[in-house]
Amino acid sequence: MSRYPNYPTTCEGVQRLELTYLRRMGLLQPGLHSRTLHWSNRGERTGSIGIEAHIRPEQDSYLRLHYTINSERKYDYLVPLEAVPGNLPGAGGYRWYMRCPKTDRRATVLYLRTGTGIFAHRQAFPQQRLYYDTQLENKRFRGLAKYYAVDRIWEEQYRKGRKTHYQGKPTKWYAKLLRLEQQTAAGAPAMFQRVLDGMR
Image (cartoon, rainbow, N blue to C red; front, side, top):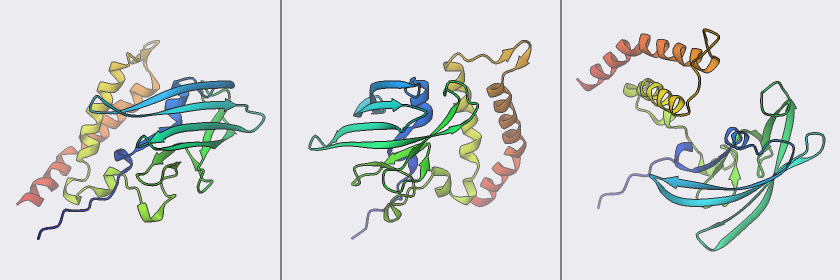
């Protein structure tokens, strides 16, 4: 009897909590803020989470997360925040990190693995290791994801309506994307040749 393949779980395949998103939502400004976030898969809502952000740069700051899994078990716990002095705009002069509720490691992204119930660092559960998609790429196709990712980034940034130039010069995000495109284009011929060689 044939066996079904058991594929490793990837970071891109689980729900996650990202500080960059919370910052864009204004939840890292000083004070108390609350919001309900929703996840979706192919346009269909798959879950939601209530977040309270208690931001007090000179004191203990934290996130309170509360949600229900499978309409049964309820979770309600705190995720400590650590403020490191920095110069990032929109962050109140601080660079924020979440402290993993399981390992206490610093993280800018926490992941919710199936069966664990809590958002935690990528390496919090060794028996349920999370991989990045790029770590599982076939060697023959390594680099293809980066090649096509440039197009996705272009679409995302233009959809946001971000400026490409300021006072006649490329903005930082635009200049960075141009460099990435040039690097990817320069390596494309050799990359595609490796793919063709592997298919022969």
